[in-house]
Image 1 (cartoon, one colour):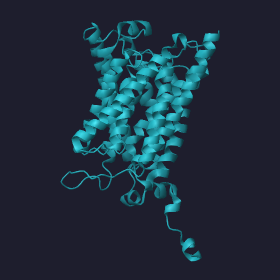
Image 2 (cartoon, helix red, strand yellow; image 1 turned 90 degrees about the vertical axis):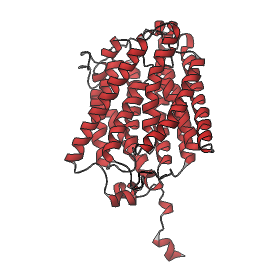
Image 3 (cartoon, one colour; image 1 turned 180 degrees about the vertical axis):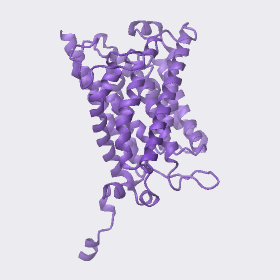
Image 4 (tube, helix red, strand yellow; image 1 turned 60 degrees about the horizontal axis):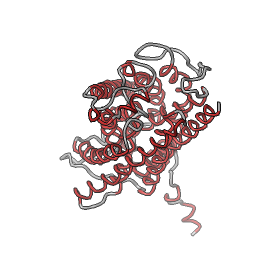
Length: 422
């Protein structure tokens, strides 16, 4: 009974750490965008986390973990299951931990909306993403769905959370189109620099710390302290991603670009999320390094394609999420796969192409589903709402003022009363 108590304590601590990541996303997104939208970004992140929580309570958990079929769960809505889970966790602890993952996926998806979407579009899409997109993919892989039956490996969500959120962000970015002034007539990009690199760096640090709960608590137990091994893999992969991305940017531009270094750290974290419990630390370093290389060139590729991604969600969570998922099919250790009970060893450990094939199938199916459903939802919203993007004038003024009636940094706005008193 003592072990069960410690399991519950560890997972609820992990829950707090993952929820802390929402604060990291606030600072990351606000710092990576312009001052006139900072208050809007902070506010919409908080209330959409509220919406996502309520939808998860109502239907999200049931669609993921309820009894149903290979495609979707169909029971246990409104927190309807009072039994002890297979991991020996109290139902509320398990429920809360899984809710946090849904909120992170939703926050990633909203990266594609940044600096140009109406507030009302966030409200509606938060409900629909949390009910119709994330739970379906999560059920396929984590809830006993058809990909789970094939042995799809995703320890903490490179596909379920990161790729799903990124594909929804891609759909939004395409429909919303680039921000005003982002591209010239000849297609060349302009840098719309974020207003606070310190915020961005602090956001990345909070995310990094939160990831110890994201990956570490996904062990669901403290037996043998395996969570420490998972956290070790998480740390070295993030470190390798940050260092590699910085040196690649330095080699390409002659400057050690700060945003690229920060995105390299996130890339390492995203890359190791799927294989965190399946690989040795040396492989985690390689996985993080390759993630750091991928993110640099992916950012450039999307920019050349005139896909405006202000916080690089598509590169960090999308392309690197794919790499992290596929990495299981290469580096998964036989003993870990057997002990955890997911899938087969990787190619480099004599497992052949079986697991790599399953991982590829999972990426393709999950990515297509998330993108297509998100695109259809947003396209319908765009038609019904008369557009999901703010007007040109509102975008120029900034969403702080146009959507909320006040600035995130009001002291930077001249006050007529101060003039009179001078």
